[in-house]
Image (tube, rainbow, N blue to C red; front, side, top):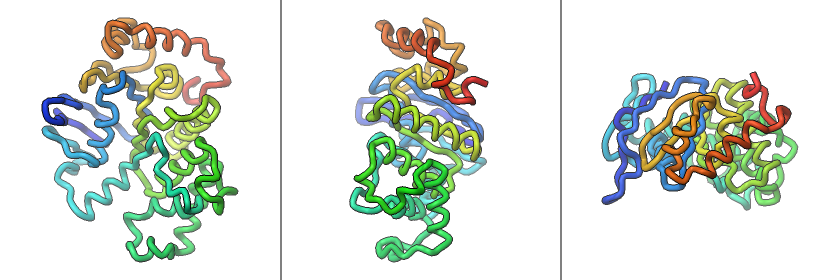
Length: 269
């Protein structure tokens, strides 16, 4: 589905992503872990083409993503939907309109500015909200919702883009544990029920182990681990988190004692 080859991004003398080779297949749910500054966010932004690679290639089903321009690039950014830590909603607009903004790539600008949406578009948006459990809040202002609810609105907006992959950049970093679980459950359900690939940057190892069957570890811009959660040995964790990997090791030990009810069905299977 998606193949990165020798993907590199430099910012001056700093190499944020270094020679990354990665294949992501349809329907995978992958967690990316690593210390701050490891290159996780830059990697997602390269895939979405929010920033340009210095070297290397990104290909999706034979298409050269780096070469896309204009309408084709807008279509790709819709297919590779981004979800951000701070939600990126328009607070003064109602929830339904925020979700409808996900159709920006296919709705003329003048209609979007005037909020002229067809009945079919509104039905799609309501269905997306229903999938994240928020259809009843469609007419509420976005800033009237809790942080966890706002993130689920952002997920519904991503669904409105009809994505092939969702790129979630620290989607639960600013949420309390209960809301974080709800958001991760929502992403897992979309992955399971819709068959949409999810590539998710996560700041806690226990969350990655609970929700993702494949984990990628990054350090200094490089992929230093790519495998199943049970393959995360002490040596692998030290390579991801550095010599002082006590925090990562502690998280790994904590995750083994999570109550089964707190984990999604896909992780218990």
